[in-house]
Image (cartoon, rainbow, N blue to C red):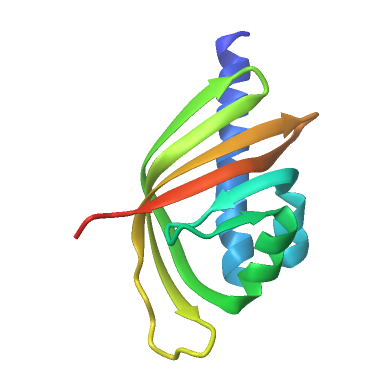
Length: 129
């Protein structure tokens, strides 16, 4: 695999990562579904574990105001990518008007299906205060 292919793959998976955050903020469930693999396993910082269907049902219960990722590290392999870093969010949980500002370490595993990147696995761990 040449260096230009790796750069192109890194750009593509980073775009998918950022597009997922945008879809969460905009509550764009069609885009979010399109970015999620059928076999998605999503482990929340709270310990809740979702598959693709239960995750897509969960998302509307949270209003995402902002999602920021820092210290991102992208590791590419053949047809897959791992993104890790620190995520800071501002959210409103259903039934609660007060904003919450969770910060966590995260890891995402993305798989390339033809030219599309889809989230295969996500896990976050609460950042220590």
